[in-house]
Image (tube, rainbow over all chains, first blue to last red; front, side):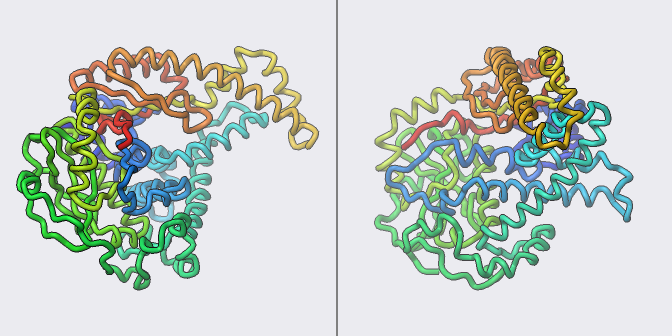
Length: 224
Length: 281
């Protein structure tokens, strides 16, 4: 499970490094040489959670007979929350992609790069895009200029999805840990006031027995 | 932070010694379970690195005979109080640790978020009574890892194919398109779309089967999941022995060459065999 260094870097240039997802030399080479191909997609590996989220939450040995399955409260991991968790990966990739673009007020210079880099990650995103495009196609839209159109669509859908997700975050999250990843920090500041009110409305926490209720928090970012 | 629970039993001495770690016993520490491996573990447990929590607890082995559970101390109350960020960090730690172990040896990965009160319950309630079953699973997974595979139709292409294969649908399309915007056309639009969806479904069954038959020879086992989007053809996990990975990749190549114009492929691995550790304890 050790990626050969050269190929690993080639892939990393575009997708970020991730010890979790390193391929065998064979596959890494393979994908590195073909990464321009739209067909075979190397799953987004940067930060790694998207690819394994469903596996670590839905698969694997379950120990439920007597064990206190508590840690973070599996019952909290509703579909919405998964979208939130997965979307943070997407945000991070956006942030990364934006940094690399080196944009100075002219984001149209490389229109294809950003979606190419970040657009592969989210199921929900893919799904919305699919839904939008199928509507478009069935509504009698021509087959020409699909590519251009697709790119535009990805931008806007991703944008609105992000907004939607932020709202969900605002609703769901009690946690406001002082970590230092900027894109989140910004979103967090915006929703801070909302969180104050909603902190106790986390679905699932209610269901837990009183003794498992987390202690009152010491305010935003104060735990570290 | 209140202590919610004190350890009812001290750590089992010989197990802790075998694990090679002497972590302090905290009154409210419980143990977080990552996976189950055969013991002895190549390289020992010390080399496994850090686990969940902040700061991350060192991972150690809790042994019982030829089995060992990989665990680290956690403070559930503390972890619960953290939000999504902490959750993400812990999920990453969980999957990173298991990936690292899977690179070295065969591991039965445990679902994220399992916490046991203490080592004694780990041994007495899981490792000893379920020993035979666990060993059977380890045998089945021996030397193999999971590779996930998802194939998704290229939308424009599959729509085109469907229309070509069913001229009656194509002919219905034109008038509908011209009348676009009228509410009267909504019903026929829906009906057209429904028929397209049915046609895609037929294609999907055929294609999914073909993909499966192509990849199966290089895999030891397979689990098929639900398609995650309306255009997904196949969402499957393959159990692939390390020695067979190159063969599996060649089959992927072949699939890509023959179907790359109509589908995109998303293939991740090798991963710990989560999908094949379908055991409830």
